[in-house]
Image 1 (cartoon, one colour):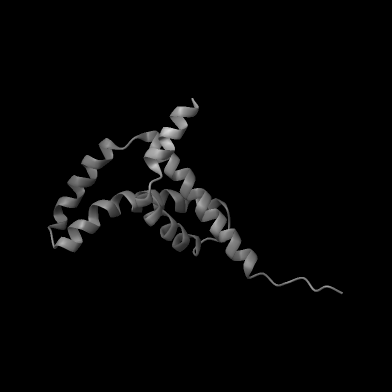
Image 2: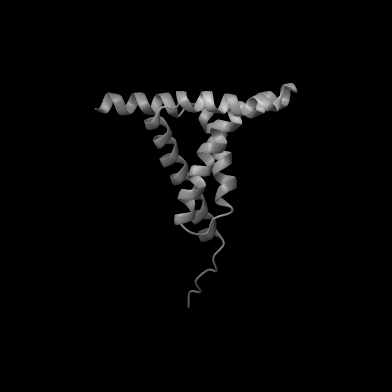
Length: 113
């Protein structure tokens, strides 16, 4: 059981994931002030993450964006549900923590007296 968890983490959370995940989570956390919207934003982040990996190479190479829906459909069939769930949990955590930290940093201080 522990080996499966370690293999899942090593498979999903790579440097490539972190290069997308941390900035995307930080940007999406700026739009949230509560915990519950963080879960909705996490689902959006997972979608942006997977579609971005397909769309950016096409856009940068000047390719035909009309092929993108077919590529998305093909990639969706290859997704592992457990890996997507792990990404959702990670994005939820990052977005909620970044959002709550931002709110805590900018709240008025308590006067000592």
